[in-house]
Every structure is written in structure tokens, then in C-alpha cells.
Length: 299
Image (tube, rainbow, N blue to C red; front, side, top):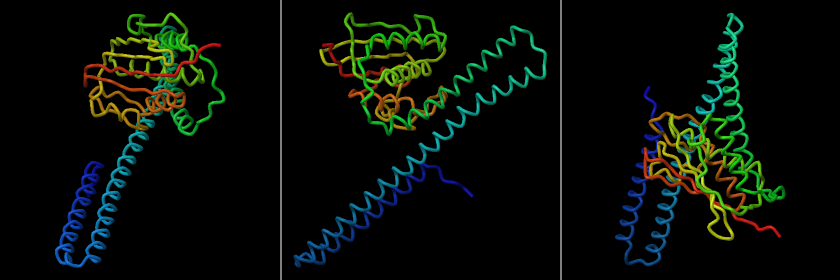
């Protein structure tokens, strides 16, 4: 038996909805033709047929959205399964090797290092899933405190260099204000947002990343963080969708992920009263993420 793909299912419901709307319009026209001299039946028929057409259109839109949502959730489950299963299998393989064979000390240290990296990958995936659920339902702001955004960005950049083993020229700060950039917020959440953007830039930059981080104060009331890379880029039609939960852009690079990183960033930024946008000239031409947060001034 041949199983239809999600795209074929969507096309089927769109076609079916269009045919039903066309049939309803044809019936409506026929009703008008036969009752054009009778005002009450004419008006009643137009209203009823308009309601039927509107219902068909809304029903088709709802079905298409549900199909797409299910497709995204399936992709998310597959991605999470891969992100969990792959490092576990790797750790198990190295542990079995260490148990069954006599390994020289340098190679043993190499195995330990690889297992630690796989452990970090597992922790990052688990934290990402948990954070996505947390930021989606959290609206409290009572834990906000003054945060110096410049210091936080410097810390995140240094951590990004260490985590991804990058030289300073691969991940560099190109602009930093001379005065303090104070924002009200949760420092852990803001650090998570900045680190997600940096990790995303590294992930989609290939083997030789070139990432520029700049923090500016364009006016008295806002701070703007800009993170640019020269990686795989983003198609124009995907620029607004990439912040949706579970949404992933399918690149030829085959980079794996859960589709939650940018969703988490947007949720955190919005909870802090800011916004985030993305720009890209297209695939293969890099991308730029611009994060804006409201500033506060010390008394």
C-alpha cells in the first residue's frame, strides 16, 4: 500500500476545499438566478451560501495547519531521538572498548575527551527541550534584576570559544559600547539566548567559522546585539518561520538539531520586552541576527 506524504495530504485538502468552494459558489449563483425577483429568498440564500463558503475555507485552513503541525512534531521527535541516541551509542562504544581492551594512556585520554563531548551534547539537548517547555509557559518577571549586557556578551563569547574550540579571530567582538548597557532581566535566561545564537552561528558556519558579535546603544532606551556569520544562509521565505517551535530549515549541509533553539531565543527576548529579527541574502550567503532589548538607567 502506498502511503501519502504530508505534502500530498496538504495538496489533497487544498484541492478538495477549492472544489467544495467552487461547488458552493455555483449553487449560490444558481440560487440567485432562480430567485432574483424574490428579495427574501435571495438575501437568505446569499447569506447561507456565504456562511457555507466561509466555513469551508476556515476548515481547509485548519486542516492544513494541523497537518503541518503534526509534520513539525514528527520532525522534532526524529531530531530529538537522533540527538539522544547518537551520543549514547558513542559513549557505549568507547566504554566497551575501554572494558575489553588494553588502551594506551594517550588514547585512553582521547576516549575520555570524546565521551565528555558526547555527554555535553546530551545535556545540551535535554536542557534545550526543558527550556522550551519552561519559556513557553513562564510569564513571571519578579526575578528580573539589572544586568550589564556588555559583560554578559563578553562572557558568552569567551564561553563559545572554549566550547567550540575556536580561536579569537573565528568568534570576535567587533563593537562594544563605552558606557554600560543595563537591561532588566533574568541573567541566566539572557545568557541562554545569547549562547543559543552563538551556537547556532557556529553550527551553520561550516569548518571555518567567521562570526562577528557587536553590541551597540543606538538610543537612550535600547541596546542592540548583532551576530553575523558567513555560513549556509537562510532562504528568504524562511526568515520569519525560523523562530517557530519545531521549525527547521533543511540545508544541504545536513546539520542536525531539534528546531527549538531560535524559538527559545525569541520567547526569552519577548519576555524581556524586546524583539529579534533575522536577515540573510540567501543560501550560502551567511545570516545576521539582531536582538533588541530595552535599557534602564541607574539612579
